[in-house]
Amino acid sequence: MRGSWYTKGMVLRFGFVFALFVSALCAQVPTSKVPALQRVATSWMERGHIPALSISVQSGGPPDYTAAWGFSDLENFVPATPRTVFRLASLSKPFTAVAALKLVEAGKLDLDAEIQRYLPSFPRKQWPITTRQLLSHLSGIRAYQGDEMNITRHYGDLMEGLEIFARDPLLHEPGTRYFYSTYGFNLAGAVVQAIAGVPFATFVEQEILKPSAAATMRPDSVFDIIPNRARGYFLQPDGNIQNCGLADTSYKLPGGGWVATASDITQFARALMDEKLLNRETLSSMWSSNRLKDGSSNDYGLGWNNERRQGLRLATHSGGQQGTSTFLILCPERKISIVVLANLESAPVRDLALDLFDEMVGSSK
View 1 (cartoon, rainbow, N blue to C red):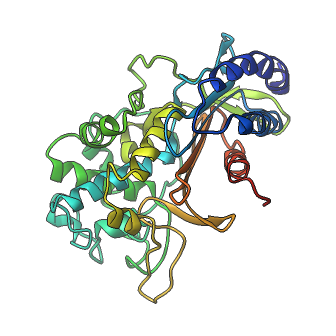
View 2: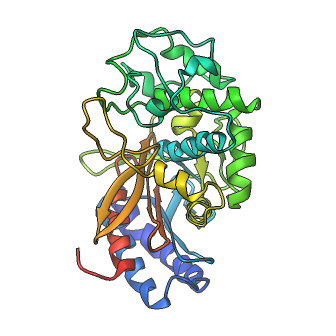
View 3: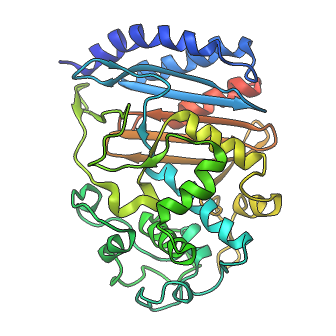
């Protein structure tokens, strides 16, 4: 069956009715914006051949505008709804950064201390590594090698997952080069776990998810029954949609191992911008670029990309892995957040999210 038949036909026809229903719940997002938001979302969905799409947009306060289109399960014709749960992939990283910074505010973590102060079992490298460098992708910890992104082994503990890269040398001296590494975030999560004295997932749930009222977000367990979980898909060059490859994300919870609804993420975004999770000074440091040892800087802060659009500062992050593509935008100045979740690899979620932002801000690109 051609993938385009699903996305252009049944996906949009079934999903749009539900989207109209949930838009009636929108208050802070002006109702005048809703048709344009729907138009942008469904247009990108059709262009990208996305089986299921969920968005959540908030501006200033609850409730959000949250909608979903398409099918979360093509084989069984299960319509997507705002309750559909997607893999977050690397959209998990901002949660790890916030968890670490909560420990900084509590006086328990020094971002510039060598990580062995908190995690003495982790092998020392050619140079010392700090948690700040882990959270800013400046540590020199390597990325995936070979087929590691397709690991199907189940890891019972975060520390066990560190074994994949723990004995490998650093790629470069920390602080001298930006190199994106999910493994670096796994190590940062292990530091959080060691300091907190509870499993990493428990700390995030207690200190971030509950205060944010992100009630559905949870670790992406291949064994647990997770209500409303979306199936994941891959689009072939010829337009056919296939089931995505297998993967067990238990080895990388801090770097890419959570699942959530779109509204879970806007709840988290609101709590951040309302300073319910971190204070203003900490937020500013998290959303500021880090300097390298040569004095240069890049556009990545602590767990967030820093961008500018429409003359406004944005904090963003993307995610992509087997069967999912995700994107989050925060605009603290306007208290706008936009979340886009799709159950398709390499879907155009960044472009979609930026177009939604343009509609919210209301000026030309």
